[in-house]
Amino acid sequence: MLLDLLLITELALLGLCTGFLAGLLGIGGGMLLVPFLTYFLGQQQVAPDLAVKMAIATSMATIVFTSISSVRAHHQRGAVRWDIARRLAPGIVLGSMTASLGVFALLKGSFLAIFFALFVSFSAFQMLRNKKPAPSRQMPGTAGQLAAGGTIGFLSGLVGAGGGFVSVPFMVWCNVAIHNAVATSAALGFPIALVNAAGYVVSGQSVDGLPAASWGYVWLPALGVIALCSVLTAPLGARAAHQLPVAQLKRAFAALLMALAAYMLWKGLTAA
Image (cartoon, rainbow, N blue to C red):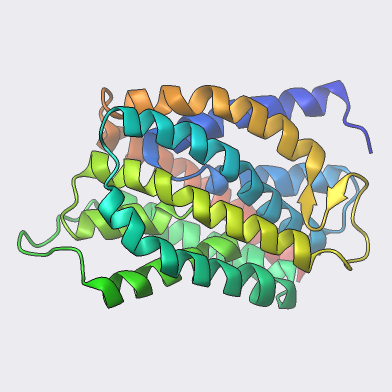
């Protein structure tokens, strides 16, 4: 299935926006990608239930590329807390494998759409609250970070996002500076995306009704266009994260997430 020029343009614009947001907020861009890709796949006559699953998988696959570009820019500024990333990574790998290789294939797309909508709404609400952590709170020990990483990887695998919607609030809650939390979340996006994307490819091999140019649940044409464009703007977002009023941008982004969550809730309810 070849893409027409209009769809290529729309995917390119989507990639540019999500790449910038990935660098700026450490979110991986999945929260923005999934609703739009669900819509685009529906326009390609993909069944609603399958469209949601493919949107989640394709979104996650793009984060493999976005995260590399984003974390490189953050690392050059010395903002990544590699000590935290190393302790969270093992749990992230385990949680991601559990989601993408097991649970994801068993769940209906309608349920995943509703779960996505509810979780994104919760994340947006937490952004708006901007509650300050207790001054004495610190990152938990090894076991606690293993559990936290597992939760981040598992939830990311169900909603197709890079984990920043959980990892950034978690690290800020543990009194990690916001710029360090965003940068470290970008670094964590790579193992999350790589493991989950591989799981989606494997678990989607025997699925019926996939469009042409699909690799398991991953829609390759969209992956190519979005990844190419997102890696161009991710470094710009990372640079802006150290210069712009991120708190104000988070509030604006939270409002956008609420609207996208409403769309996915509607898709989930009508596909059920």
